[in-house]
Length: 284
Length: 262
Image 1 (cartoon, rainbow over the protein chains, first blue to last red):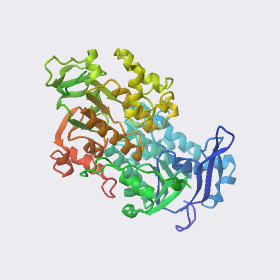
Image 2 (image 1 turned 180 degrees about the horizontal axis):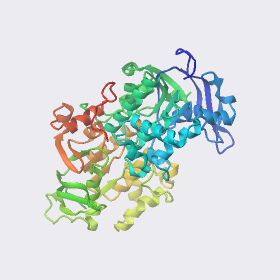
Image 3 (image 1 turned 120 degrees about the vertical axis):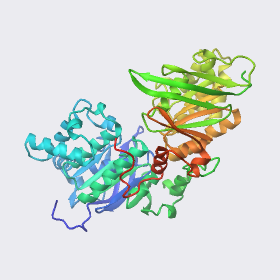
Image 4 (image 1 turned 90 degrees about the vertical axis):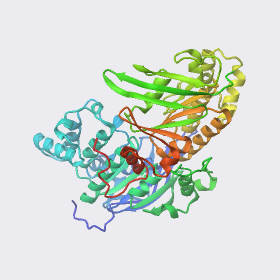
């Protein structure tokens, strides 16, 4: 790893804004002034669809669609100003020092490449090693995400494996270059509840072992609150509340409370369920 | 039409795809006006049960029949009246509505198939019932949000005045706040029309909220049948049901050994 001390922030985001052109010539701001500092910790970003949580993650990685405009007072990764990087530097960071796990392995893995070849491709893009070494490393990476028979899975195509297996393969691919920051955008939403927890446990162990920073983006407030150290709740492109892990019950913002309240709970007899009464001032 | 309520009985249902047994000898019974939830992981055969009931999956053996107090013989599966009485709402409202048809056309089609008169008022009423005004009538699906789309999918099923609604993960593609709205709508419709529900979901909390009884499936087989009250009070007998229950409470550090690895 780099020679930075453990207290240095991995990522500093100050007043991040992402906007897209809309039909009547103006711009729609999907992210409106998000700021946070990330150390070697697990940060959760929670919000509903359209809250700007995914656009925040994509902007950090430089994956915003070409028509989108990203601005920020500061957007620094280990002291590197991401907004003033050349496309080439950005490319080197992406997949190398900053990696991203996407939602659905069915759509985000290359369907015409074997899983092993995809993992090797990531490795060869970021390090200079021989093909043989790369293969050995890829198999070791598949093993690290608790795939039982990595030799066999190496040769399989994405359609031949289950969702949970595909997601583990993607995590292996993302972690093989030893990133310092991992952005996981709904990494478990496409998986079954029981598989979800297995994948989270693997992710958790790897984050701890390697001392990575993790940004965990999800719509599932309860899941995130049990997994992350800190949670940012986003609404309409802004962070409306920051909650410490386990502090979900003390959430103050009416949106967070409403969101929690409208979930059905086991052993709870509330008919009808309370619904979220959106206040226009939340979006101000 | 159809004054009396009907329930549903499935006996020893078996569905086989290319030698793979998707559902193995499953039986279930839902009385008129009752609601049954089916929970399980993907691949457990829960959706296939629904699809076999309404004829979208081939039945290799077993019977599906309607039950009720009516004197007249109840329609048989596969017949047109059966398909009118038993309607399905699918999981993904982004995939289950025709992208190039307006809401009006989507709702008019089942009416045309079943030769139902007075399409105009029926469409307006159906939209009203799912909480969307007539202003939505000439929109395309892409002009609607996920929750609005699912409401249209529910309206499409309800427009035929069915007695049984088969719900295949009706809220899993929706945000939490929208999920609450759709669940309330379903509950309200059921109370108003005396509908019978069979609902498939992987979310135990959602199923117990809407259904009185539930059936847990694993690898095509019924693992456990229990009431929602028993589940909420933690009176479960099967270890698999317990695993599902624990999984629904969220992530716990140091609990890596949940279930067997896939």
